[in-house]
Image (cartoon, rainbow, N blue to C red; front, side, top):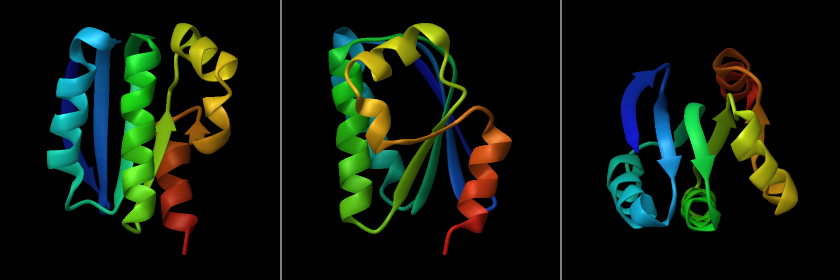
Length: 113
């Protein structure tokens, strides 16, 4: 699991690559809590994420709940076919704003009040 952070127009973009699974989900979640604490708007670019399991999904849901509770927002983009299946089977896609491209997600942030 690899991630890269980039600030763009007051949005922290987190590019995620690899497999977000049980063996790394706790470290991922802890790293994200630390790195995202000062960012109100967060975009997870998932074009490099090959696989996600229930632990990884739980980590992302925890981050979403945390940000929503603290007046922030998280959007996802570029969800690949295999991870998308997990989001659809679990119905988790209903609680996230998911966009096909990073550009669409960035525009949604700028359109929001």
